[in-house]
Length: 217
Image (cartoon, rainbow, N blue to C red; front, side, top):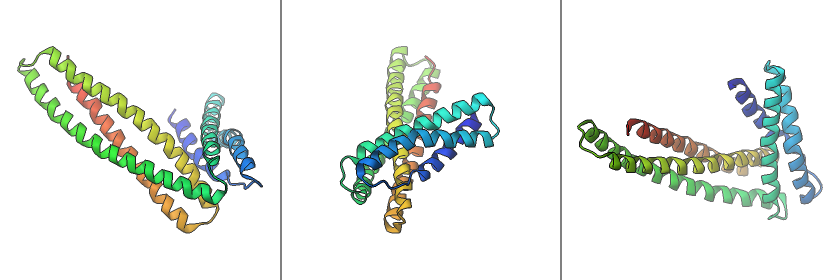
């Protein structure tokens, strides 16, 4: 399973770099993106899977997975392009959108860190009382519900961030194909910011899971 995941990640990057053909109109460009998303992504992943030495069943899984990811990103690209009249406007507009999204996620990340810190303090206090049999099961259950609810919320937010990252990486590949160094460098920083935010949020999610495990109700 790990090898399949590695193939998917590698070939997703190759696929994104391959979708750089420039059709004659924005409508053609949008349609081309959606078609390339599934077909090219699937073909590339299938070839990579063979090179990686996967068996037939694993190749099918890898190919289908990458084709699906590519199709989703391609559709996102198509939908967002509808707002713009040209490729240049599309790039600049989506860079601004990414900056706002990333700014919001950094705010969310910092707020989450503070919330998890408070929960850790309360968790430590309750565990200490629990060992001395000085806290009721009702109080522990209430605290655990707070932790579980927070885990669910973070999971939803993390998924949203990961989906946006896929789009930003695809957009980065498109911008790179134009050889616009100033725009590329600017957007590269945004992609990096989002990646770093995701790592932190996932770490906080892990800490929440540990807090839940520490409670025995």
